[in-house]
Length: 153
Image (cartoon, rainbow, N blue to C red):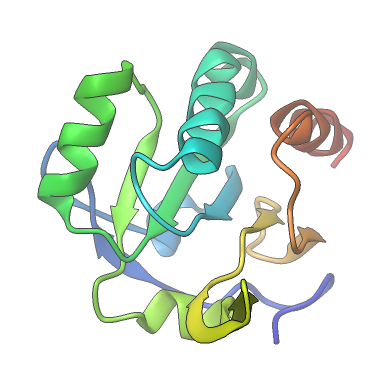
């Protein structure tokens, strides 16, 4: 499980709109890597919209925001178009990034047990170290809290 002070696990993933994104390409830049369960669901939509609403403030502070789920790039593109999202959405269809960051976990809902993505956020500094971790994220106010923390590192 990745924790504060750890070296952020490297990754490369296809992104919505085409192309790929890799952590090594973000060297010297702060990165908000947030994991969410599924495109176009209520909590995930709210979280993505909140990060989009603050995109200019993140960018002005040299911070990249990347949302990650196991949805395909095609689903990410539909999700972004439908809701006017302007953040980077990375596809982790094989689950390698989720596994590396320890967010693919056993979940329980209405008596049912299943595997899924635990809503989590990792703030990575410009040197590739994890500066802050939020697990079991509650969406309301989260993007603002991440921006405030990112400005401090």
